[in-house]
Image (cartoon, rainbow, N blue to C red):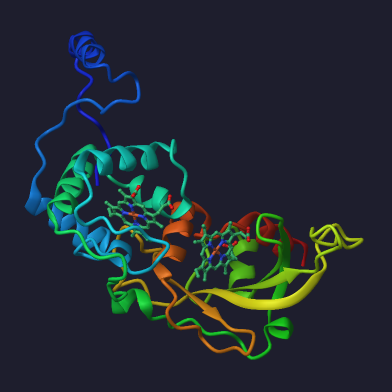
Length: 283
Ligand code: HEC
Ligand code: HEC
């Protein structure tokens, strides 16, 4: 989608400025006028780009995602602009909003505003392509993979261990994008807490792990991205969560994984490519 705004014509600004002042709106008021919203285009854009989380009908798929059906159009537009600029911060929704043009924003806002509102308990089912995951976990990843990074997460009292397979390590060593066959496993551990309620620090500078919570996995195989909406797709990567008993967790909204990792398209969609490359080169 194009992101360029087409409104900064010379001469338009002083007039608008006067208008904005006259209305008492100040700097945080609505942005400059745009082309009229197109409801049909709005519906198509919502179905393609927003349905995985907010539902095509504006009734969301989960409690952490707002319903948008029947919400006021100008409010939606303002929030989308703030999410796009980063003035309102949310890693998942920010990555989605970053891809919207000014026209997209007015179209989708008008469409959501036109829908009947829903009751607080109604939910939309996750689309099949978002609910499913083909990622696997090796039977003994600690033996067959290489641990390449430890991450303290003081924000959620966790310590995480990151593992990569040979395919990923070889590509990182050679400075190539991680190809099909790459497989990354992230162990999430609750940190042991001290009497002050804070994580206990080990002598290595990392939190002491107390209890395994889950395995977050990324794996890339040919064709795995083909059914995923383009604004979420991470080429052929898929995501999945395994329980400590190595069962694939169901009900996970994989579009959140995809959205948050999507801006890292130049780093093979990983947050840890630097550490992976360093470890791969040392071996
Ligand atoms: C991967 C999931 C995901 C997708 C896809 C997604 N959203 Fe969101 N959206 C969220 C989440 C999560 C929030 C809540 C953000 C927060 O807590 O600040 C949100 C919040 C919003 C808000 C703010 C609502 C409010 O009440 O303030 C708007 C507007 C919005 N989304 C519009 C869209 C539009 C338009 C699209 C499609 C172009 C879209 N979203 C696609 C997850 C998603
Ligand atoms: C809000 C953003 C966000 C979301 C959503 C997210 N991740 Fe990540 N992911 C990260 C960050 C940041 C890291 C780096 C390690 C850390 O800080 O914990 C990471 C690291 C990873 C890694 C290690 C490879 C790498 O990219 O460095 C895997 C595997 C992974 N995430 C899988 C998942 C899965 C599976 C999901 C969905 C269930 C998911 N992630 C959702 C932000 C996110």
